[in-house]
Amino acid sequence: MSVEVEKDAGNVANALIQTQGNDLVLKVLQGRMDEIQERKTRLEARKSALLDDIESRVITDEEIAAMAQYSEAVMAGLADPTPEMKRGWLERLNASVIVEKGMAIVECVLGTSPILSMKLRNHHR
Image (cartoon, rainbow, N blue to C red; front, side):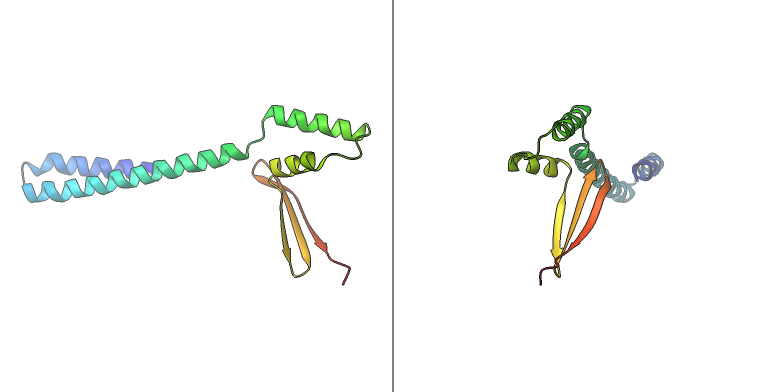
C-alpha cells in the first residue's frame, strides 16, 4: 500500500511540473497531494498500531526461561501454586475462555499462533 501511495505522489509531482502555472490545475493537484498525504499518515498510524500489537504478544527469552523454571518447579513438587501465579501465566499466554450453551472454549496463544484450543462440556445437568 505504501508503494502505491509513493507512486501516486510521484505521478502528481510530475503533473505539477507540467502545469506551467495553470492555477486551476495546480489547485486540483494540490488537493490530490493533500489526499495522498492523509492516506500516507493513516497507513503509517496503522502500521505503528500493528507493530505495537505484535510487540505486545511476543514472549521474550527471559519469559520463556521463567516459564521453564516454573515448569521445573512444578515437576519437582510444586503441587499448589497460588492463584496469582496461575493467573499470571494464563494472562501471559493470552488465555481466553468463552462459555456458550453449557460449553467452555479455552484458547491459549504463544506468539501469534494458538497452541491450545479445547472445548469442555458441562456434564452436570
